[in-house]
Image 1 (cartoon, rainbow, N blue to C red):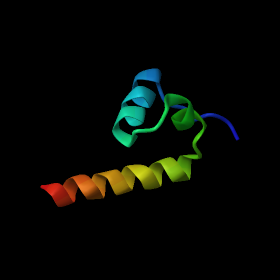
Image 2 (cartoon, rainbow, N blue to C red):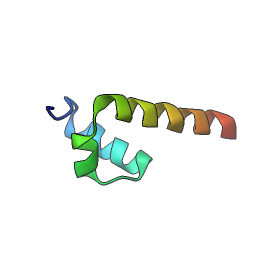
Image 3 (cartoon, rainbow, N blue to C red):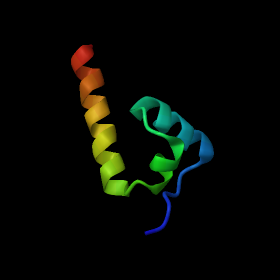
Image 4 (tube, one colour):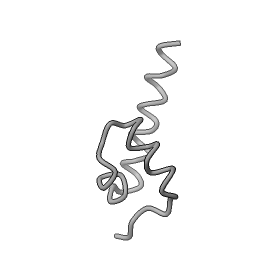
Length: 48
């Protein structure tokens, strides 16, 4: 499996928002990352 094709800035922002290390973001499978982003978005919309 190859690393995600995202920029360093994007990876840093994702690591901050998901509270995981930067290395873990870069080696996370894409479908898991998308699921975590969807979960984060749902939590954000529920707060509003």
